[in-house]
Length: 240
View (cartoon, rainbow, N blue to C red):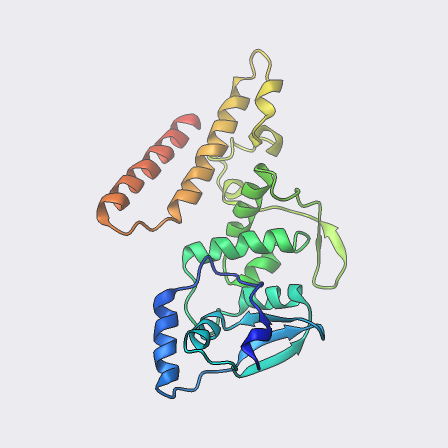
């Protein structure tokens, strides 16, 4: 297939790895035959679903064509396929890639359940729930009201996060509304716990996000670990 026709708008990874592109490009020059890339088309546009590093390598070598399996479908079909493409082959997804994939899936497929998204990506449904809650908190996605079941029917949504599984971090069963930022203004005398719960929610989210960062040297790693340890310490204090 002509590379110029392929739209690279269903990218799941946080970024393309230039070292892998270089390795693939050299291998292609040496005559190594790679598997065909996966492309979805609606008859007008062609959306790449799997094979971004291969396409980049072929482009680097100034190839005009690349072997491709053409499937019927839209950009959404290509994106959903892309979310699960690297479970069986290709460059293993990093933790940052997984977070990026979850964030993209939750925004692009808001009515799919946490379990369905987790199964497609190859991660824990609890991790998906944490990312969904984080996106809801900052207003990037609406709170999930219903989900689409495997039978295609709509069911009431249930959300499981690491906080749900750990009552110490979740205010011993306090309702979700108390955990949402912005509710402090409704506090009244004797309701100081509501502010504490909000602080705990923020600290918990900070630990989750910071834990996914991989510094490039030991000094940054040590500094990051100190910040994470401090947040965890404050969480323990707030739960007393």
